[in-house]
Image (cartoon, rainbow, N blue to C red; front, side):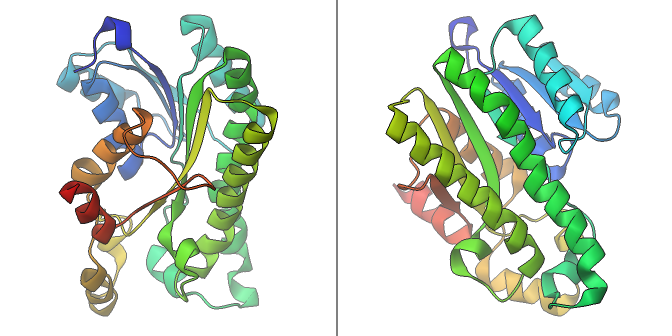
Length: 260
């Protein structure tokens, strides 16, 4: 468990989704300060987490990560209360129609959904990073995690729409990381976590039998048991990214990490 001296201040966008919620709970159990956001009110979730973990330094703010003013206001609240942001976690993502979008092919009919995915998955990461990264540069320290998918690394014929958005997040991460190297900035660690399939109600729950079987062969990750502790290992610098800042984590690499 963390102690007072090791306490960090985390800001989690998309903190009420299946993945974000798992990470927020994990960080709260470790007794860190956690601000988490959602586009909808989640005060009840905050109360549940405080009761479960005994950590009263868990805060909720209603915020859309694609709204610059809302993001800026949340960041100001964190800074006014604790003076810094140690960890920025970007877990906002479009969580509808996964079964349809997973199979989507180029079509004019699907462009409205493409716009939504790009707005949430791409801009929902770009805006928080662009607001917080300059603050971390002034602090001289901080860790940023952006979220991606292994299908971008593999150029899969599945998840076309998600690949379009998440490829932009991956390149943003790599570009900022490269700029930090060029400018000699060493205190900021920005990484891109490329996840395999995470089993939850918005993924597994909407797939048909054949789609489930296809992913079953590759294996699923569990948000609470697998992803949350892995994210914490990244935050504690126990897992290192490649040169472009990418860390791959799927069912196969999970076993590789566990065996080492």
